[in-house]
Length: 404
Image (tube, rainbow, N blue to C red; front, side, top):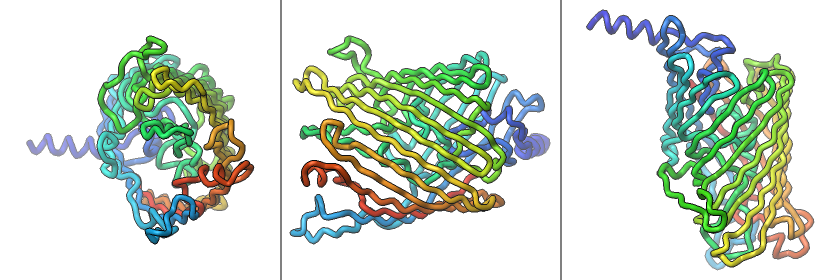
């Protein structure tokens, strides 16, 4: 027993090799482990690695809403959703086995329902250009979502990805947004010549809050009512790290161009068929990070809804960050969203500014941002009032993050 405990302690003190080749072996979508020392279990050959990780975020939030949607008779205040929050409290482990299989599982204690299981997958790489991933993981759509969670430029994602669109029908079950995030499914992916990447997958299309199978066949198209998604990328200077600025990597020179598309058949309680398409760009050049995306969504009702009209939505953002020092990164983003649809004039314009402060010795990251949501180009006051319903005109966030 004593010899077993000594052996176990020795294994726990073995760090994962700090070589770039192991970055994908410790990929988890939450925190970057490449080059970090910590507790791990590994064989001498390195064909088995088991690495735990942790991410905790605590935030202070202030949100000020304009008068639309507020009822003075109930003395409703303009300040809502203000106070402290725990966006994520993730504990997980990742690693590899048999030199071909990588795996990852993480639990988000700050979530509820199906969201508690943040992700759970294994990936079999037959060769660099062909691998199969099965489980719950990020769908291949949007650079903003595919960025490592703890290494995003700002503490909140672009509103154009996360906010539900506005449909001129009172169907409470139909509230699609352009962003997808985590889902259950299977994906084929690979990397060719260290420059060309691809991901093609089939998913439930029910999002991260559902961990069960509950879909059927499409009455309109007679195919499984699932989410079909794909993404291709071109990285002329080698593999793009999945971060938006890292003080440990201030001498990168990388570029990424990407195209993605998806079709969610009978999504939103079998009411609509949602088609999405996106284009993305990202660049890391020493202390500078730049990123931009443009995405489109078409919402078409199923025949059973007896609504023939289709609705189209457009959104996107451009953002950048620059390290003034290895600890201070200034950030800015311009986000826009045609939330009312392309058939109606007017859109939301949403500038944001902030900064990041890194305390690398303690794996701490402090983020702060301010965002303003404005409205422009609307033909009627009603369109203008509806476009930002439920969205804060002024919002401020301070987030402190610890990773292990």
